[in-house]
Image (tube, rainbow, N blue to C red):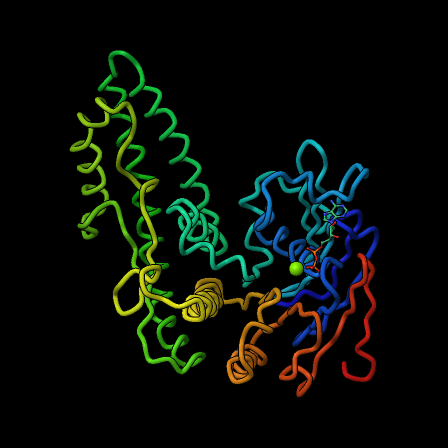
Length: 364
Ligand SMILES: Nc1ncnc2c1ncn2[C@@H]1O[C@H](COP(=O)(O)OP(=O)(O)O)[C@@H](O)[C@H]1O
Ligand SMILES: [Mg+2]
C-alpha cells in the first residue's frame, strides 16, 4: 500500500500542513524538535487508532486548539481516504467520509511498521509491553483477534470480581472459564502463528543485515504446553489453578500472563547482547513484521524509520536500504540526508517548526 498524501491540522506542532509522498523513498529532514516524529506519529495513529508515544491523546492536539485532524489519502487495491479527528472527549474515525464506530473496523486499513530508537526499551520492559507489541501486530492482520482480546479482558475482569467475593460462586466460574477458553483458543493460536511466521525470517534477516553470525529468534512463552488440543488444555489450566486463584483472589494463569522472549542463541538477549546487537535484533524483528503483514494480508505495509539510519554504520545502512527500497514505500526521518540515500531516487521534505517544504526539486 502507498500513502499518497497527508494533511495535518492542529496536530502537535502542525497548524496546517500538506504533503504528497512518492511511492518509494521519502526523506523527512529537519533539526531537532521541528516535528519529524510528530509526522510519523500521525500515520501510526491512523494505523493503530492510537499513538505509539503517549496514551493521553489530548497531547496530540495543538496547544489551545479544540481538536486535531489527520487526513490521509492512500492506495492499495483501491483508493481510500482515512480521516481521524481527535478531540477532548475522544475521537471520530472516518473512511471515505463515512464514520466508523469500532476501532477494529478502522485498524488494518493503513498498515505501517515503525522502527524508532525507543523500541529498544521493549527488551527490558515488563512482559505486558511485549504482549502489547504482539497484540498490536496481530491486530493489524486480524480484526477478529482484537475482538477476542477485548472479550477476554472483559471476562477476566468478571472472573476477578467473583474471586474477590467472600464465597466465590464456582458455578459462575465454570461458565466464565468456558467462555474464556473460547477467546483464548483463538488468541493463543494467532500468537503461535505470529511467532512462527516471524521466526521464519528474523534469523536470516539479522545475519543479512549485520554480518554477525549469531542466531536470533523469538520464543513464545505460552500459558499452556500442549497446543494440540488447545481448548481442552486451556480449560484444564483454569480448572487446575482454580483453588489457588480463589486463595489469592485473582486469576493467576492465562493469556494475560504470557510473554514474548527475544533470544540470541537460545538465551534471553537481555543477558548477553550488546547495544548494537539489540538494535540489529529489533531491526530484524521489524523487517520480519513487514513480511508477516504482507503474508497475512497480501498487502505491503509502509515502513517508517524514525532517526535510526544515523545509528547504523555505512554498510548496514546500505544493506537495509537495499532490502526495503524496492518493495516498500519508506518514510525516513533524519537530521541530514544520509549518504546512502543520496545515491538513489528520493523525495525530500524539510520540516521547520511545523511547516513543511517539499525540496525534492528534480529528484522526484
Ligand atoms: N500538542 C502540541 N502542541 C504544540 N506543539 C507540540 C505539541 N506536541 C508537541 N509539540 C512540539 O513538537 C516538537 C517536537 O516534535 P518532534 O516531532 O518530536 O521533533 P523531531 O523533529 O525532533 O522528531 C516540540 O517542539 C514540541 O514542543
Ligand atoms: Mg524525533
